[in-house]
Amino acid sequence: MNLNKVMLAGNLTRDPELKYTPNNTAVCNIGVASNRTWRDKDGQKQEEVTFVDCEAWGKTGEAINEYLTKGRPIFIEGRLKLDQWQDKEGQNRSKLKVVIDNFQFVDSKPEGGQQQHPPRRQPARSQAPPDPDPNNGYETGGMGGVSEDGPPF
Image (cartoon, rainbow, N blue to C red; front, side, top):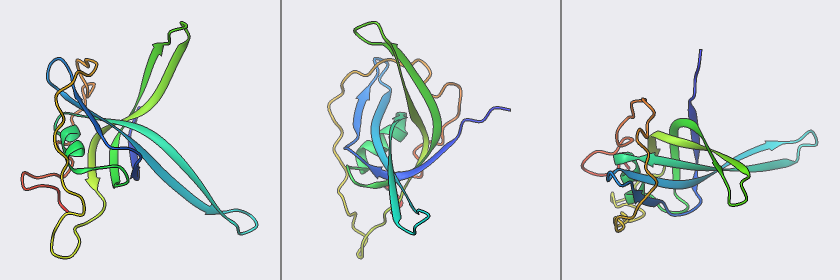
C-alpha cells in the first residue's frame, strides 16, 4: 500500500509568489513555518520551527495568492514531491516540498465581518516552469474552501 498525504498548519514566511506556465496554468509558491513546542525532561519549554516550501496549482494557487500574505496562518492538505536537478557545478541536488491539494483559512473575520487583510491584487503574468500534469493524476479539491463570495472567514 502506498500513501502520500501531508497535513500542515503554520504561518506564511513570505508573501505568495504567483506565476503562470506557458499553458497559462497558475502556480503559486509559498513558504510555511510550523512550530512544535514541548517540555524536556527538566520541565523546560522547548520549541522547534520547521520551514516547508509549498506549491499550489490552478484556482487553489490563485486563491492563496489573492487572500493570504506573509504571517497569515494556513492549514494545508497535500502530498510530498521530490524535485531533482543538477546545479551549475554538475552536482545532483534535490528538494522536498508539499504540493497543496486543499487549504483552509485559519484566522477569522473580526467584529463587523471585515477581513483582517485586504485581498491581494493579481500580479502581471510571468512565466513559471512548465508542468504537464501538476497533480500527477490526483484529483484536487478545487479552491480549498473558497466560494465565489470570497474566503469563508
